[in-house]
Length: 387
Ligand code: NAD
Ligand code: ZN
Image (cartoon, rainbow, N blue to C red; front, side):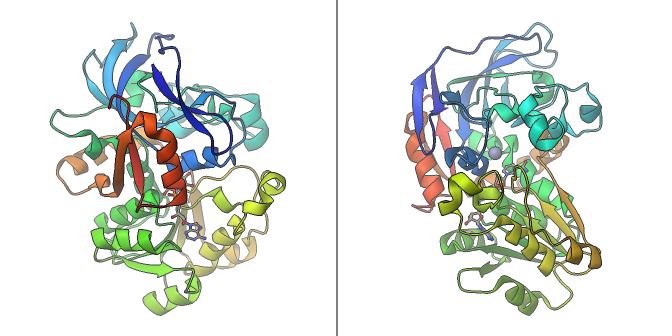
């Protein structure tokens, strides 16, 4: 079967690999029908993420039809249409019992992870040997462990593009608003107008935020979001100074909530400094400091942008004096996806608004390049393995 493989920096190849098989009793094998490229995949594409090996199969946002079922899977049968979660829980460890599925201790800890994070993180599909080295789902077939927990059945009649983003970025956008505690009447500022930031704006408006300001330097992306959410306000940081613009728009005692949906693309840490020094346009810690600087006293910061390793020059002084709360994390998808599916079904959430390109899996390299280069109005690419 065909799968998208990582061959090194900015080198993606679709290759023939052996079809996955059931290896554990609670596995299913999915025939993948739709699989998206995520901003997190760009960290791999740009070789910012340690722990990749040439030939690794990419992809953590996917859905499909159940083709084979392990003997201990209870709730799924051949032919069911399901979405797979990007992170995998085992459903029985301390973390899963507390709905902290993205911190699952049972899926695949590794020594390398422990050395970086001080503690093991969960298993992710297609996301480096730091997170278990599981083959990903940008492929014709994929294996999903602990399938009862890690697959969500979708009702017939809902097209793939409506539900595929329940695998990651709709729950992640929601998680951002939960981490930031967005509630009715809040004034919310969001850094990053990629698919995650744009859907975070969508979720904040859904929750009744009074004002939502989206920040980026990509004029096309800001306009794209505004076209879909007329209530949205935007700041282009290539021509506006973010803290001044926010104060001018929202007044002195705002924003109540700041959301970070950018991640370590521009991170200036010990991990990336040497190899990627020439790529760095901004020190990511400067973005975090910008959130700390902009947030009102007693305000809340939610970080879903992905980081790895250490980040220095972090303004703990201002953070403490202003009495801020900051929360971060990989999304516990399974905690949210049942409720989110209902909102998608009744039309009050429309995550497919960010999908701009659908193309055959065989064009994966083109999809990655287009998404990374932010050309052709590209926001979210969905690959079709059987086209
Ligand atoms: P993306 O790369 O398409 O979007 C990031 C956007 O941030 C880009 O439009 C970029 O121009 C903008 N940006 C860069 N520097 C900025 C700055 N200083 N201020 C404001 N904006 C800036 O990626 P995406 O798919 O939208 O994902 C966003 C982040 O969310 C990534 O780091 C991704 O890894 C992360 N993510 C996290 C989770 C999770 O579980 N926490 C899940 C999915 C994605
Ligand atoms: Zn993702």
